[in-house]
Length: 74
Image 1: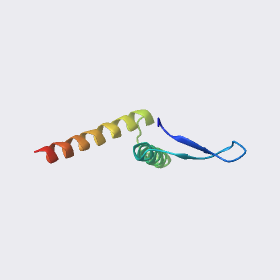
Image 2: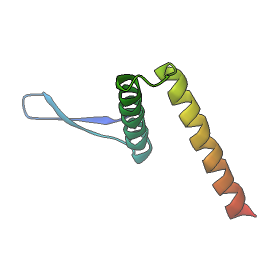
Image 3: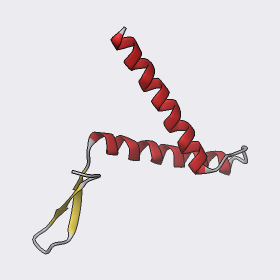
Image 4: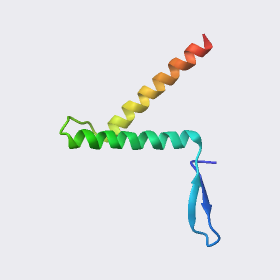
């Protein structure tokens, strides 16, 4: 299915999209990362580039997933 499947009305206008759960969760995480970044920036807190923060979060999530997989196979 790729990243999603568009839903069109009778005029051919896109009115919705079907996403995999994985893609939906990824989008929610990206939105949360963006919100956190904007809040930190507004407060004058030290920040790192958004892409770097997203990469760090994805790596952390991957490590957490790997730990779960190890526990279930042990």
